[in-house]
Length: 130
Image 1: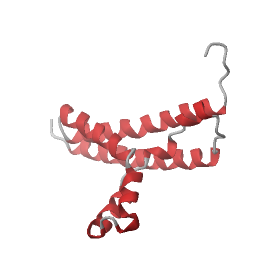
Image 2: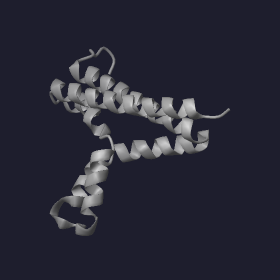
Image 3: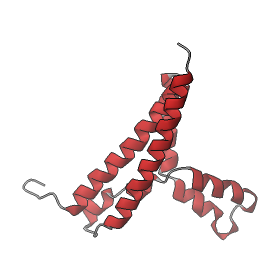
């Protein structure tokens, strides 16, 4: 809409997208140091899809839907970064208030995951033989 103002929800959405891009870039660097570019891009896409689907893993363990895989899904839920923690895009259109503490916590978690992935990429890149 022309003439609109940038509110808190828009700023939260932009910050969330930047946090998400930071983590995805670090994953791409890690996979790029590990494999060829095609595999790294497919792996980054798979990570993006898995990161936005972590709530589905939690739902699979509830209500005893799959009791034999419950342990596996719980481990995966804890290991895969939840990219929905910084997704505030829907707040821009729905008019809901932004929980800035949740955004800050999500941004901190994304920074820790990005540091882990970048440390792994640095380690792998230093060991690489050219």
